Length: 198
DNA sequence: TACGGGATCCACT
DNA sequence: GTGGATCCCGTAT
Image (cartoon, rainbow, N blue to C red; front, side, top):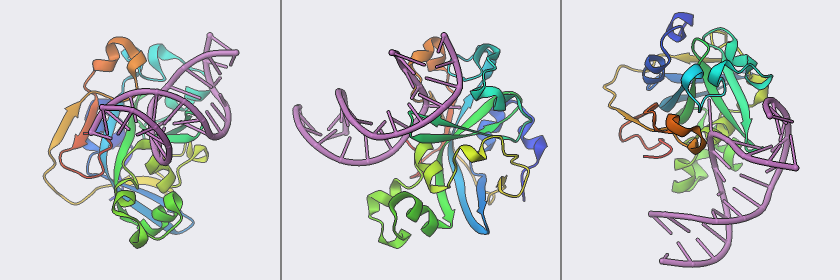
């Protein structure tokens, strides 16, 4: 079942935790890619120096952040990779790790230009265990920036009922963010192989 | 296993 | 002109 606007219209930390175990679906011209979210990071806007919208900044890049809850915020990082975020209320959740479920051959081709079964053990592990990697595998780029996640192209749905053991720790790659670098806003599913960093 | 540099773009200052 | 919510490969331990 597809997640609706109400799911995203809540506290960002709550949404970041509840996104674990949910299924990300990208319909590329009828070619469906699906994967389970296993790692997220919450970015809290106003008092979070690691967030693009820190202090209410509203530049051209971050203006998408001020759109409705349940919108995709995609931006380029380090010149060559894209990061995929899910908006809550003027804040966002970065998706850092996904476990591939459907369309795995397409993902393997996107990442390594060969079928899933011909990947090495290491390549399978590195298919979607990081924000830049999963964006390549899921064909997420800047054309999906500001896309409504309550639509039919890119959306989230409920996973199977299961017991999820959530690990709560600090975020990655934000050393410049002063006190905010120590905020425990990274969440991942304990023991899952597609977590980017344990 | 752990570090360091290169790749490559554009928003921001 | 600068530098980043990253990844990958090379070299060193």
